[in-house]
Image (cartoon, rainbow, N blue to C red; front, side):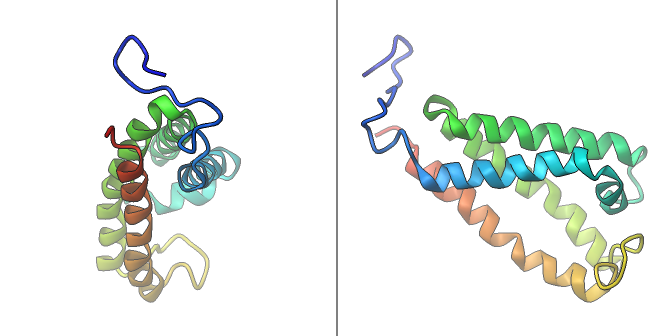
Length: 142
């Protein structure tokens, strides 16, 4: 069915309606967003030191993750949600690079505070980039 704005609105019978790749990403981001509010002290510790008011950044990133998850659930906004997910992942990557160059997340408990853990975290971000990119590709208008 095509809506007034020219977009296709998948019915529940359409395979695009239930997209396990997109819904998995939504669950991942939704869980991360909830965690920012359930355990803000942990996330405050990984906010780069040059940024003021870590709690603000913790809550803001939680809101972004929850909003992105919501966009990924609805077929009409799934592509936008996937683009927002990719932008979020790319946007926080410099903070992870900063932590690695700084020798780790010093306020975390071992072994999370180590330089090795910070460096290991960097390549683990790439599957998340790919995950968001796959959802973008799967939801492109044809």
